[in-house]
Amino acid sequence: MRPDTSQRYGTFGRVVNFCAAFLLAAFCYAATAAADDTLDVLVLGDSLSAGYGLEPGQSFPAKLEKKLIAGGLKVKVHNAGVSGDTASAGLSRLDWALAGVPGGKPDLAIVELGANDALRGIDPKVTIKALSGILDRFRKDGVPVLLAGMKSPPNMGSDYLKQFDAIYPDLARKYGVALYPFFLEGVAGIRKLNLPDGIHPTAEGIDVIVARITPMVHSLLTKQ
Image (cartoon, rainbow, N blue to C red):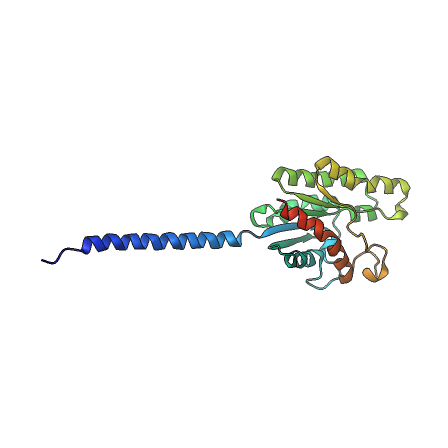
């Protein structure tokens, strides 16, 4: 009499199917995890970071992303720059900016706002209040911040200049965030690195900014 092997092989088949399903699930999980390990950087700014007057791919966020990737990081830099924005305008659209980042929580936020406040002579107290609101939100959400400083144009007068220029180091100390003292360092006042308006960087000017700020950004992303 031939032994009945149907039950034995039926059980074996179910085990094989279970193992295959388990391995497939594990593979899918690993693939998803690998896809999700991208570091997200949000650049909340104005025309200086939005890429005013530049071709696509020449903006600060685009060039910063390329530089960080060349440095070995898997990163996506989100351009949340809007031309003409003051610090108060940046605060008002913060929810919208965060909605563009997966999970609504970037691994790093670069705050580049305030240049238009200075150009329009807005009371520094108003700028401080708006930037504080932005930093409060990021602190609440546990988002590391790199605060990009601005400087007042000299034609605003010495009193205004003193008050405005103190905003960024004071806020960086208060909130314990990293400070890049002047976003336009190495570019401001250099004709060949600015568009004809003398305010916005050319593509070459953006290269200078990116080269100077990338080491700090890289350090903030890799120390987490």
